[in-house]
Image 1 (cartoon, rainbow, N blue to C red):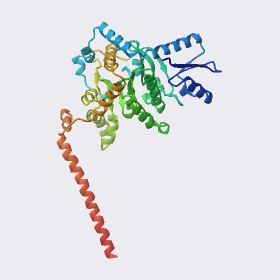
Image 2 (tube, rainbow, N blue to C red):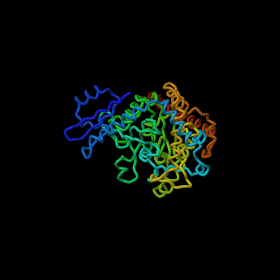
Image 3 (cartoon, helix red, strand yellow):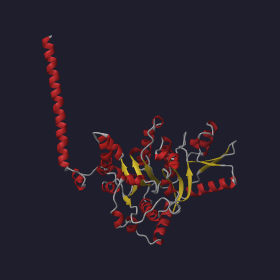
Image 4 (cartoon, rainbow, N blue to C red):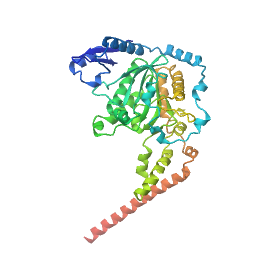
Length: 428
């Protein structure tokens, strides 16, 4: 299957390259109807500086080459050969850590350290992905600066890779909108996933976001609808989805791109419905600013554990499949992280080896079974957590007592109100 790659030359001497899963006739009709300034319809912009013809030929050739590598049987065999040539077995792929790493202290603030490897570092790491070609635009009206991605090769296998960019400096963080995506970003991710489905390529998503961008404009543009649509489409996507929680996993902002068949999580990250600071702001009660300054950070750490946002907790309840342990004996930063690179490669490789042999129906059923089974553990399961100050039975007793108290209060209030009404009528 040859992809549709349309190269356009406009009066400003700017070449616009569009990669689309739509038909060429549809693209031409759209472009004749709407102006070329519609940034959501443009994937790659090539300046007229230098050897333009050679640049375009190289780009188009790389796009076609990458999207044409869709023989998953052949690519699975090549992955097996890579594993054999590197003398790696399945146990080594699964247990890519040592006891020192397992003893590390979990602290959600580590996910925000500015020198940690981030999504853009992993995508542009030539030891993980090669031949990466960034695409852009939601296919409708805009492009996002946070969720970015494109097509790449993973050990010779064509794939789609996308994730939340952040930044390591104040300037780059601002350019990426501090890791908060707009509806254009989620629709762009959807467009890439549908492109992957058409060309039979696996999808690899990398998550690192504090949450979706909470602005009035984003809500007007359909932020919640964009995330919900992604969840619906991902549930039925016929190609494997592999997700890695790189840093922060902020609620719905993370859910919009993380419905993976297999989910790996870096040990320094977190994934929850609300940040510990948000939870502490709701639940915390402080008599003055001095007490809040002292107690608030402690409450955040306690609530982080109670929320089960850490990798080891999420693996126990089935949300995360594998923990990708970050080394603690050796300090690694985004500038150099060879040990973490190897462990990320091991996780992606083992996931692909297990998922690529499946047919479309098996891939969907595998994903459905994973998410359908979430939350089906027994009440006594909570006893395994040491942070609970009371037993589940005590919590249940307190809840029932609270419910009965409220019920009796309402009944008493109703009785008094009714009696006063009757008394008033009798006096009249």
